[in-house]
Image 1 (cartoon, rainbow, N blue to C red):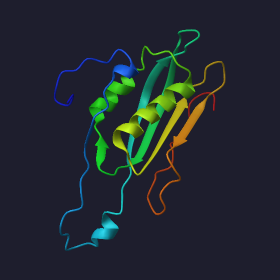
Image 2 (cartoon, rainbow, N blue to C red; image 1 turned 90 degrees about the vertical axis):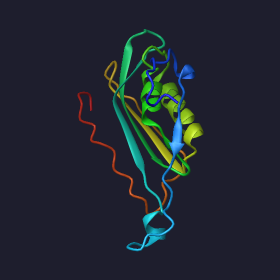
Image 3 (cartoon, helix red, strand yellow; image 1 turned 30 degrees about the horizontal axis):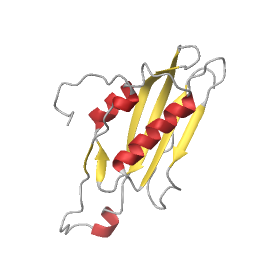
Length: 156
């Protein structure tokens, strides 16, 4: 496990390890609240405001804000391994869509959540912003899923 250990940034996304930890489970007894309603489900959000990768054609850096929302089942995504995984894209050359889908695929496979959404808000290059949106299924009914942040940088 990488948590609590000195770890180097992986050289590529393929070399990065995404680790999961056991999700909290419903306590055996909760006297003061309705157990079923309380533990129906929750959504966790990770936001990586300084994601970088490289353009596969020019080698120039591309920047994005990555937002990951998910409704855990048995496992949570361990945040240090997520940080190292996302950082491993720094010297990785791929188009915006490929980076976004690689993130979604690896995280979904590792955590197997009830629901997941990955949004990549790419900063404009050549005057055209590219935003990528992926989700595993329609959002669960009755679950609080926060709105996406306002896109307030130049080029919008």
